[in-house]
Image (tube, rainbow, N blue to C red; front, side, top):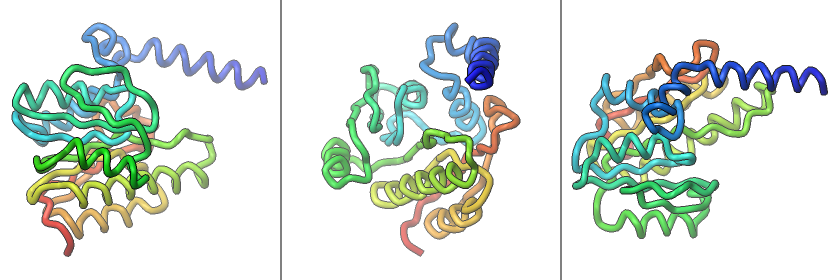
Length: 209
């Protein structure tokens, strides 16, 4: 128990001292993860004014915040998570598991006739610390998000998702290449160096191979 307490204290200290956490607090963002998407946006110009964005696993809302800023008043941001998310101006939120038929139908109803231009996902499972458990769970979430993207994206659309290096990583990249013209991975500066996470960036959606 003492070991767990000391590791929790170390994590809290690292979190408080994290420059991205401090910057998020100063600039009014909901999470440090905002800066990961902002860096991807700077490199790849993924989200543009007037677009429709679907944010999967959106709570606490950091990526949705960035998306709202980028799409402007003519764009739309639709977000979904199994956890509640505080209201965010310009975001239409659907509570629930998007892999369940009822929630999926709710999301489609909110989307309506407008094509989705980009699906973004910063989802990760609750980590147990056991790689043999965490890696399959995380890859499963990416696969679910990719499957959702393939169902709702307009031709030419894009997909961005957190992926962890390890078993199943190459399989997900291969699957994405079946549906998109260009697939690459990026490691934003805001992503902690010791983390195995990278971001899959897929553009030029063309549907089934």
